[in-house]
Length: 303
Image 1: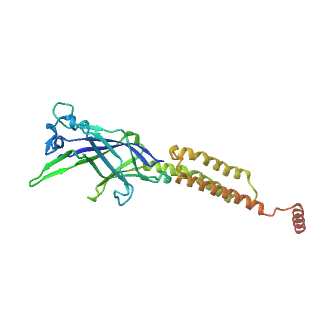
Image 2: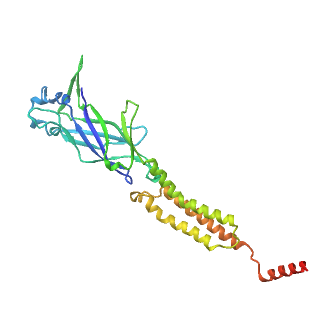
């Protein structure tokens, strides 16, 4: 039997709330429509033989079980469900034929760690999607030796991505296990974007290291205002970088990897600055008397 087509289009990713917004579409096949029966008092009658008013408002359930664990079960998986009147899944012509339905966006949970930005990855796992019809409608299929009565409609699932997620890389996956059947998406950031963010975040630390290395090569014996100003300027360049590198929607998730790098840069550069100051103030300066004594000894030696 040709299955129904269940399509899930990911519209947007809400990183702080760890959810995605998705549109659910369902299209029945003509073969399924021709095998739907209405359960009457004493027998089952083909849907096409029954007045449409008796079944068009019966709700068909679209179940999408999303799992956030490596061992999905019904207990640890939420189940957002969209329902649609059966009449909307039928054509509008005189004869009963297959139709289609698209829901308003539904919210599905994803697993991920926003605090690992820009290496944050989000995973949407869909376990055992189903289309179910309630008691009152039955899908009747005949095999070679028996008749199969079912309240579930066989489906194939298609995943699609809205252009709103074009700034991410999206990879589809399918579980190799037959039970439970799982498909899903892995939403990541482009590698070039991640490398660029890391390099920009590390740049102040590298510049501070260059300034410190130059000062050590010069072997400064006194506090050098120019050296200190250089390190302070590097620290000041770090402060605006956070608002440039970290997206605004991550402001509520706490510190990210970029924040850790920037904070480390501030601490290291400040340590260079304080170490330079400490080295200069701990050295004993030569006073006037000592300088005169050294000059007299030099003159006596020359005479």
